[in-house]
Length: 174
Image (cartoon, rainbow, N blue to C red; front, side, top):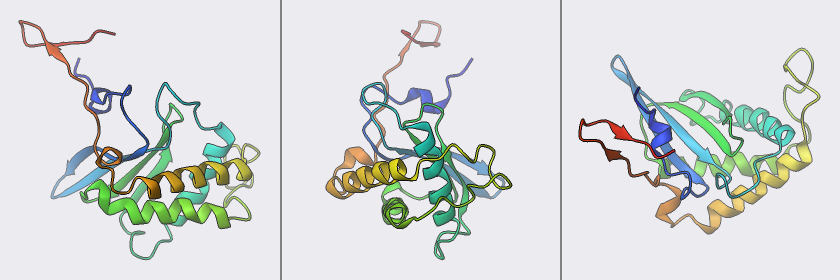
């Protein structure tokens, strides 16, 4: 069985940042999945679940209302490992091109006075939100992006080296 692309990223070396996870062709169009990584996998505590949920709601609302980007947004949602989010956009842009959009999205969390859609009619678990912690994580990531905007490592995945067997199959040491 082929290893999926996201498992070829060296999770021991990845840092928080904005990365291209995969590009898919749909007919004449492309769709790109971006890895918006807030935490270092396996080295930092993951994002609190309730805060992650609040960040999902606030930032999805921001992205889908941004006049320049709203027609390009397909999906914004949390990673299962709780170290970041996936953003899926129409087209294929370099991660650096998303810097301003994502900085604005995470900065917008500071101004939130409520979590959009945090009501029983709108949300599958409306009581599981933590706006104050969401603000803390958003500020932490915004500050990090500002401090590292010229650091290539926040825009380029570290790739895992995979050995090939004599038969041409990938060898996985885990």
